[in-house]
Image 1 (cartoon, rainbow, N blue to C red):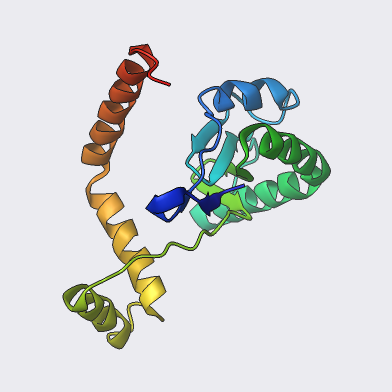
Image 2: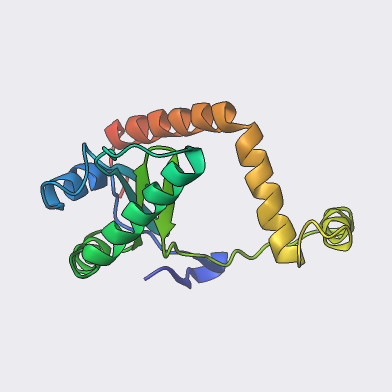
Length: 185
């Protein structure tokens, strides 16, 4: 799965099956009672992340810190209690969609992701870009160029969410039009 030699074009990411129905598949596959509603399912080329909302806490807490600790504890309990079933569902999802599956849970103001996939990304940078990364490392913002690059990507993602959402929507429309076009194969 993943990568392969593509003739004269070099080493590239291999095609993975579409996962347009992943939210519906996971929603239908999950046991009743795990989450209060349909889980949030996020898909990219490498990973599917399934995050569900746990039933709310009913107890009273002295302060926000105590409530946050209780939320964290409930999420930890969910993680342990559902481990074997989540592994089996993930195995089936990975076979179906040829991507890693990770899990998470949300409760109140607390969200935790369990064992997400970290994917190496290769890039070529010219000196000005490398100097930016080195500055972040030298300033202690990041431990390495790799961490600095991940930090920069997160920062851009936070500040460009609406633009990225618009771009993804436009790409989806292009994909729809492309699928309606003639088959040239």
